[in-house]
Each structure stands twice: as structure tokens, then as C-alpha cells.
Image (cartoon, rainbow, N blue to C red; front, side):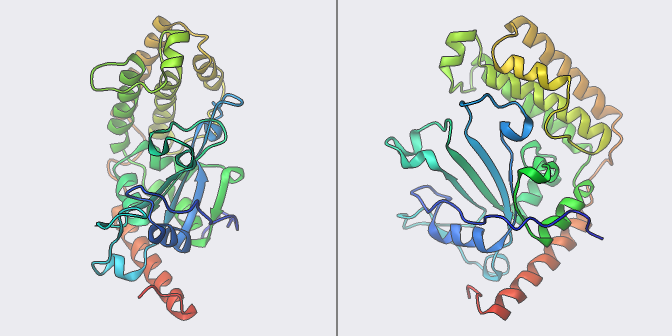
Length: 299
């Protein structure tokens, strides 16, 4: 029985834009089929710095029948003549400012991505740290969640497995490389490097991934916001109050802890793909039937 509560919040998304995953048709699919929408950025981790952060949201939607059982596609952006498969609706409100897609999000901006349920499940089953987070967001940070989304969240354990160990470690190391501006990495906050000698936000996220990855592997859950004493240390790193040598030492310890947690994790070796397949099938069929009953089918 589902115990997670329904949240009757806002489904509306920013209008389409000239981006491959931001057509008006994709927006309509994401809004109509939305089952879950949550905050996933620094605000939900507890690591935000007042007046500095944008708002990151992630959601999941069910697709119309023709996009799952047929060959339907959506335009590539609002002006694109080409078509792409529908996988997500992605929109950053900072794109509306002069500079468009080249702009970097900042305080007051909204970055939102609504994945198709099928793509989200593929990523989550593989242990992707970013998408798994949506399963553990506290109710006060949930924007929208219907009964289908509530059932998904109530079965978060179906997605958790030892596969997450390698994914969390890989993401941590990517953040570390970006923090140091290594070859192949991109540091997009030069003002932090100039002030502190390293990108403090990348450093904080690297350490956060270590904390959350170890907790997930040992307990099957992620606590949000990050609990103390880790939270205070992460915030100190974010503010540039920890020296680079100390940050590198802490990151090294986090890497070792992840490897150790992965070796003797309490979670299953593999996720429950059979349950996920069943959930995807019956959720889509029920959605298509409801659309037909209400006369809203896209066919």
C-alpha cells in the first residue's frame, strides 16, 4: 500500500525555447503526464548560500501512447525543422535574458528538467546519483506528486543497488576534476577560483556525493538535507573557509569511504528491474486510458 502522500502542486512549466529539448510539444507532454516534480539543487541539500543560488527542479512524466508504442517525435526546439525523440523537457529561465543559451544560471533563476518515466528509470536503475535524489526529497520540497508518483517514491528501494557505488564515485571524481580545472574538465566559476584558489562549489558537491553515496549504500536511503556534522563542513567548503589541501584530503577520504561502502554494501547487487518494468507498463496504460476517457488523447 502506498504511504507517500499526494501533493497537488504546480505542473506549469516555462514556455518553449530554441533548445533541442524545449519545444512547446515537449512542454505539453511533460505538463500533461507529470507524476512528480521536486527541488533537487543546493536548497534541498541544505548547502545553499543566501542570495547566490538558482533553483533546480527535476520531474518525471508519462508519455502519450504514440511516443511509446509508435514512432512519434517532437520538434527540435520551437524553431527547429528537425525532430527528436521525446526524452525530457529542459528549460532554464536564464535563457530569456540577453545572451540566451550561453548564460549561466544565478540567484532567482529556475532550471527545470522533466524526464520521461522510461528515461528516468533507465538512469535510476543504473545508479545515477542525480536522478536517484528525486526519490528522497522531503515533502516540503515536493512541487507536485500524484498517486503514480507517490507509488514510485514509496518503492525507492527497488532502484537502489550496489551499482550506485561506481556511479557516485565517478560523479565525485568528475566534480573533483572540475574543481581543479584539469584537462577535459570545465570550471565555469572563475570568480570562485580567483577568490579561494579553487572552485568551492564543485568541491562541496564532490564531498556531498561522498556523504550521500556512502549513506545510500549502507542504508538504502539518502537523508535530505544533509545531516550534521557533514552539513556544516560542506557549507564551510562552499564558503571557501577550508584550504585546498584540506579539501583534497577530505575528498580522498570520501573516495576511500565510497569504495569501502561499495565493497560491503547492505543494498542488493542489482535493482528490481521486474518491478520497474511492471510499474512502467501499468502506469502508462492507466494514463492512456484516462486520456482517452477525458478526450485528451494526443492521437
